[in-house]
Length: 72
Image (cartoon, rainbow, N blue to C red; front, side, top):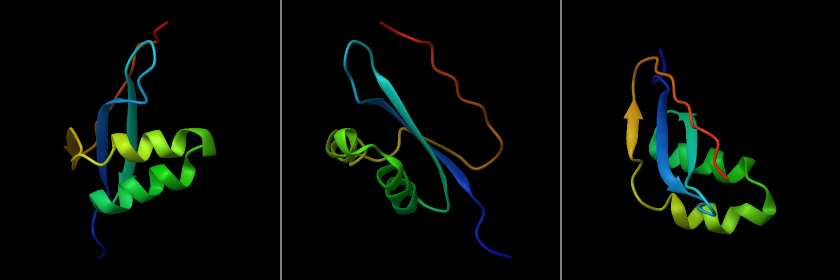
């Protein structure tokens, strides 16, 4: 059986008027970063790459929900 997926969460990313959040389901943090950058829009990729350079703020090895209030 392969390695289990974990949920990686970066907070305070892609900040404009309010902070954004990045979440990726992956086997390890390097894969989580790669998945986020693969799926990012061209316009956001450079900023996102800078923001997720730091270690993930939270890592969940078991089922867990995340939600973010809208801002403006």
